[in-house]
Length: 383
Image (cartoon, rainbow, N blue to C red):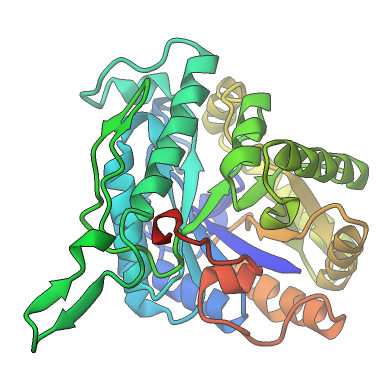
């Protein structure tokens, strides 16, 4: 079973900030180090843009730090755990994204993940000087596909053995092992090569979560990990089977894709105590925040996924059963309240999963691809 942790502000419940013990700016370093001590595969950092609807409501925790510099600051504070950051594709360029993740992957010794955010937020466009965005859904996802393919080509523009730094001969690098990509597409024209060596993992892990039909087609063609939002076992089984079939249709081996289900646990020592805590959380959502969240429900961002209310032992049993049934390869934890919910998740849930044989007791590899059981991609330019 694979297990990742998403971090955002004071938690994924809209009233989380009202019950969180964290200051206005949480201590992400401590949370990442706790997740690493528990042996999780990766920590994923959410998008940086906050909605004006949430900000202006005054009752929602819409303050989110830019995940890219945050990820960079966490590299030296951790050793083995994977680190992912979300990037809005609509307001960035493939070259910059490819270079940033290549550098981060090398600095972290192969632990970086790119969380692809396909949303095209109209309110964000007012804050960025940029070319007009695609006017149709089809064009938007065609641009997203081209964007990802360009990034992959740029990561491959340096062969693995390019740098030799031979002081005796005076040769620093084999110039013939650096390749221009000369991409000229509908949305991007990129000569290349990248101004950074090939990532340690060959290509950083690509994470996606867009549940729209177009988003699923994009994931089938390009994703390494998909974070799915499904509320029932049967829904999850059908979803995973469908996405794996689409991956095969796209010409890829379905074994190259990991499907993780989004999960927000609300845990307590007993079932009734957990129900009481969930009721208390739901009752403390500020009315203005609830209205803002409802108004934004139509955005094609990640749905909340499964919410479990009960004990850690019962949740561990359910998580193991769903993986065994083929519903998923693992879970992406989205704590209701941060950092408070990390305690029971890491000290009670994780040991319960380990005792049942669902989760490893220690890291077996050093890179995120090794944690996930994904092969290092070959470089097509090596031939």
